[in-house]
Image 1 (cartoon, rainbow, N blue to C red):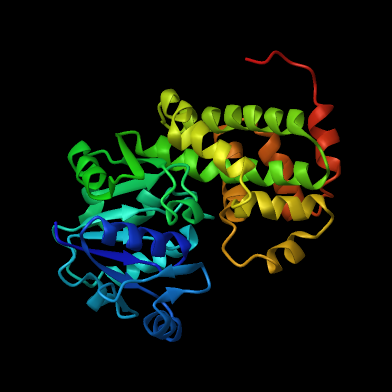
Image 2: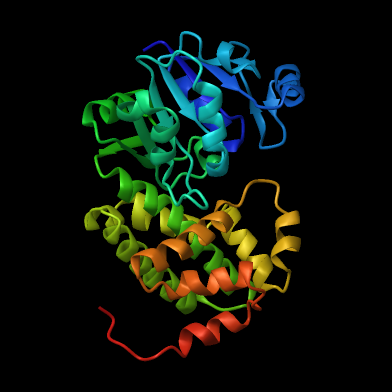
Length: 332
């Protein structure tokens, strides 16, 4: 493999482009907005999302998707989850034969309740067996600085997962493989809801005890829904389960936790969102997860309370009481 196209020049897409360039690959970085692609080319720096890190001259930056994927053997789909379908529709007329598609988006599509691999397979049926999910506890702010990180490449085709593992593996990025695509995707998406809850807790001034309870019971919710949807229980004890949950719930880099903290401090969902630069994936995921919990008849009290705050006007301060005063029950 010689050439890789990274589709999406946000923080994670830019970071992965820089990482793959260091690994010795020819990299093309695709930016949707032509005017911002011009900024990236002129400044050779993603000043909006990854400031302070130079983009080497030999990384081709383009807003033309056909140019971006020309000759590339691997395509990294690095757009927000709600954009994945429209990106796939841009790719549909193009020749994707023999190309591996790597999705790094973490979310569940609203209305259809599909995981990202399912969205890709529906829009690009010919690539159904060529999709690999790359997920795990990996803030771009740390990966771009070379801080040791471990993630997972998941595919139903273990050979494809191993190819992606080899491509991304580096001195500061360790990659494991997994065949439980559903579990890896659900862990990466659902933990954002719990991170919002932990942020609310921080905003309300609660402590470590509260956050530990939210994370532990949150993982209980995630695994129950995941297993009901066909995931393997062990996946949620791994990097894309508890690992990603910990990182997202405690980190100052976590946009979902930061968003929740503003809610806890009294801002409305709309006002808090207006202060965010990057996409808060957990908002849309909360809506999807709430619908999935009803569909599969899975009790998810933390998700239900976050949903009530985001979509039903419930005050963040009322969440703690609603959770603490539920009917007593055994832990397992």
